[in-house]
Length: 64
Length: 401
Ligand code: HEM
Ligand code: SF4
Image (tube, rainbow over all chains, first blue to last red; front, side, top):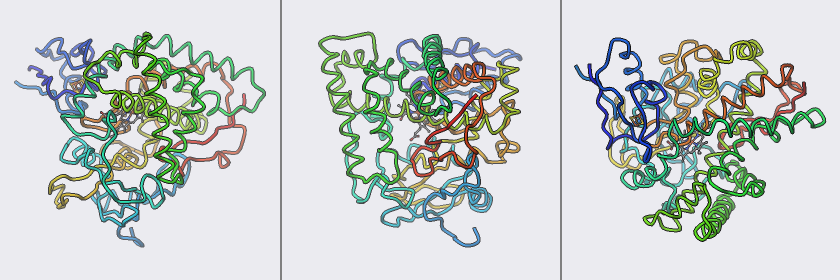
């Protein structure tokens, strides 16, 4: 499974970096999402789903 | 809803200091998208109380923040007495839609990241200790709002923005008037203009003599007009102290009235991040909004919302929705309360939320540790509640130890 982030949609609320710090960080300049690791392991799946659910702008998506 | 079919504004009655009006549960269960009357023109708008639908509305920018016709969701002079569209003040992006909103918000989001806010933790902790030291040396009882809940977020936002802390009495008082349901619209406007003028004057000084603060950074941005800068500074100053202050005041009251929860936090301080989310959910200090206006006809859960109709999203109702949270009326600091709407949802989701989290975690943790015997100094019924204010909380909280 892979995680995708649409940086044009992201409003830099930081819910992703708060919920799944192993998977997401925020850009130093504009706070927008940075995906640290897009290939998900079994271990990450739950946190990734939670981040998708909590993201206020709908910028995150999981495929595969 | 046996007696009234269409609520005349948001119900403000409360059965106790912590639970919202009991009619909210009934409205949510029977009509999660209900009609509601807005004031002063008796506009027939909508009231959304269901968690999922509240999220849906907030995520949909056709429910506009920019096109809001001035109206009040309560029958009070609060906000507006003339229903006449007024231009949004430059810089106040909480009242804009994309792309105007995006342009201004992006100028600040780099400052409010999770990482940057975590870096502020040590300074927040010093500010908290400073106030607890001062509180300890006061004759008891002490008003916790005056000595703890209000000054801590004020000092934090002043330092971040570069606003001299000596100015706090002035802007705290103006903010209090702005959010009072009994303040006349013209007075509210003059307080708003005064704070904006004060920020604008500060910015002039920062332009010639910049310091290491957010207002100085913004003066260096050539893409921002002076009016926009004043509007953004105003928004951050006002949004940055009053909300967090009410969470600290009401949150402390809630912990004192639920001593088993306070005891749990004293023995297991690692629960604090969860407890903060739970307090945000349980207390929902934003009790009269967010508000939006449909800019086209929109279908919502089988209802036809027409262009120009207003929608009031009830954060207290959504945060107590049993479809989302088990036993929603129970304060349980061990539960997973994420997904609450205390900071809103969608493109306007609170910009300062990571800062507010750090402030609340640090302040509650230090307070509980420092005063193991903290207790109310008056009967709970005598604590004055902010049912008369745009942001809910307590006016004062007399405590002793
Ligand atoms: C516990 C404390 C806080 C609560 C409950 C809270 C709540 C909210 C809510 C519900 C919104 C969304 C409004 C809407 O959708 O129309 C919002 C937006 C906002 N908040 Fe907060 N807030 C808090 C603390 C702060 C702090 C500390 C700051 C500043 C440092 C801040 C700055 C803002 C700004 C600038 C916006 C507008 C964001 C936008 O329109 O994109 N807030 N807040
Ligand atoms: S939670 Fe969504 S909006 Fe917020 S930073 Fe992450 S991707 Fe962006």
